[in-house]
Amino acid sequence: MSLSVNDHMNSIFLRGITQIRASEKEILKEWEEVIFHLRNTGKSSVHIAEDMVEFYSTILFKKNFDDHEPLLDLANAKHAITLPSYNSNKFIGTLLENSTLQVIQAIAPEYHEYHHAIQFVFSIINEKIFIPFEIDIFLKDLVQSQQLPINWAAIVKQSDHTFTVEKWFDSSDELLFFKTDELKADSIYSLSEALIRLNSTDKARIGSVFPIPHEDRTILIYTTENPAIILPFLSYSLQIFQKGRETLKITQQEIMWKDFVIMFNENIMRSKTLAEAVEQISVGFIKFLPFERCALFSYSMNEQMGFGLFGKHLDNKAIQSITEDINNLPIIQNYIQLLEHFGRNINFIQPIFIKDAVAGFPKAYVEQFQLGSIVIAPIFTTSTNKLLGAAILDQGPGKYFKAPKETFSALLKFGQSAGELLSRFYSTTNEQQKAGTKHFSPREIEVLKLMADGASTYEAASKLNLSEYTVRDYVSTVMQKMDAKNRTEAVAKAIREGFI
Image (cartoon, rainbow, N blue to C red; front, side, top):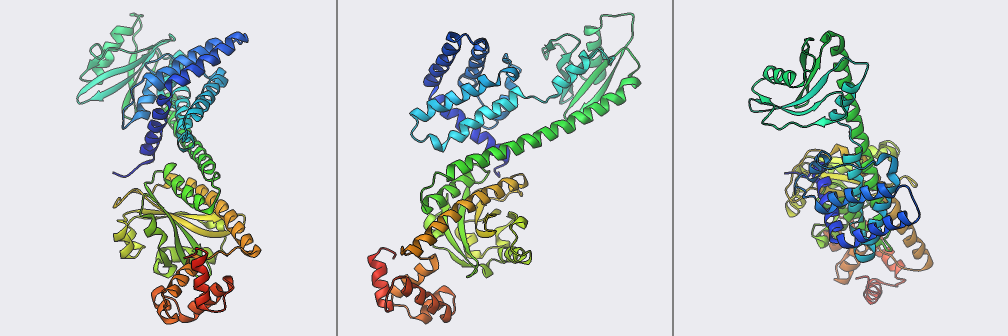
C-alpha cells in the first residue's frame, strides 16, 4: 500500500502524541502553574483555562487513539466530550501549547527532531474539534431559523437493509442522539413514520417528510408547510455547504503544507556545514512529506553531470559514489532542455513524477535500489535563477504509487529552500577557494583517485566515460589547485592533505 498524505498526517500525529505523553507529569505540572498564575493575578480567563486544561488532558493523555486512523478518532471525539469556549479565548490554547513545547524542550535532548509533530498535534486538534464545518451545525441552524418552516431534521445512515437515525435536530438547543434500538427501520418511509409519531406535538396539523441524499447519508426534513416552498432552497443550500466544506478542506491543506515548509526551513537552517545541510535536506523531504526514501544529487550545468550527495533510508555510500551523465537519463535531460528553451527561467520549473522508474533510469539503478514509482523534486534558487540539483523520492523499495499532486507545491517550496541554503554554502566554498582553501568537485576527486592508482589519461577517460581531452583538463585543474609541478606531486599532496 502506498503512503498517502492522510497516512502521513496520521503518522505525524501519533509521533507527536507519543512524545507529549512521555512528558505527561511535567506538562500537567506546568499547566497547573499557568492556572495558578492566572488566578493570582485576577485574570477573568482562569475558568476558561481550567476548562481548556481539562479538555487537553482528556485528549492528550486519556483518549485511546486508533493506530491506523487517529485523526478520524479525533474528529469523532467532539461528540463525546464537553468542549470549552475556544473561539473567544484562543490565547489560552496558544499559552498551553507553548508551555507544552517549553517543557519538552527542557527535558528532551532531541527535541528538535520531533517538535514539528508536537506542533502538528495542537494544530490538528484546533482544526478537527474547534473549527468544525459539518452537516450537524448546518442542519441545526436551519431548523432553529425563524424564517424557514422546518419543524425538525434527522441524519440517517444505511447499513445493509436497515436505516438508522444517527442525529435529530429540532428548535431546541440540544442535539439529540437516539439509541439505535429505538429508531431504525427497513425503509426510509417506515423510519419517517416513526419519527413523526415520536416528535409530532401538533396532531391537528399534517406534515410531510422528504429525504435529501447527502454523501453516504440521507437527510430527512419534516415540515407542516408545502415542501415545494423550501425544497429548492434546501437543495441549493446543501450544494453551497458542500462547496464551502471542500474549499475549507483545500485551504486547511494549503495551510498544513505551509506549516511543513516552515518546519522544514527551521530544520535545515540549523546546518553549520555543507555535509550537515545535505543530510538535513534529505531527512526533511521524508520527515515532512509522504515519502520513505530520498537521494539528493547536485547538478553541474557545464559538465551535464549529476553527482550523488546523500541518501536517506538508502545505501548512502552507493548514492555518493554515483556520477552520472545526464544524457543517460532521457527524462531529466528533456526536462533540462525544456528549461533551457525558456532561457533557464526557474519560474517554469516543476516536480517530475515517473510512474515506473524503468522508463527514465538505467536498469542497473532500478535493480540496485529497487525503484518503482519516483518523484523528482528540483533543487534550485530563484535569487540566482539556477538549477543546483534534485531530490529523488519514493515510498519504499519496489513501491508503485499515484502522482501525489497535492504535494507538488510543497515540493517546490522545499526545493527552493534547499537550493538557497546550498547556494550559500557553495558561495562560502568559492570564497574559501579564492582565499587559498582548496576544494575539489566530485569529478576532480575521481580523477585524483585514478591518478593515484597510476591510471593513464586514456584509462581514466575510459573509466569515466569522458574524452581524453576532458580528462587532461581535469588533471591540469587539479595540478593547479594543488600547486604541483606534475601528476605525482599533485597526488602526493592530495593524500597528505586528506583529499583522497
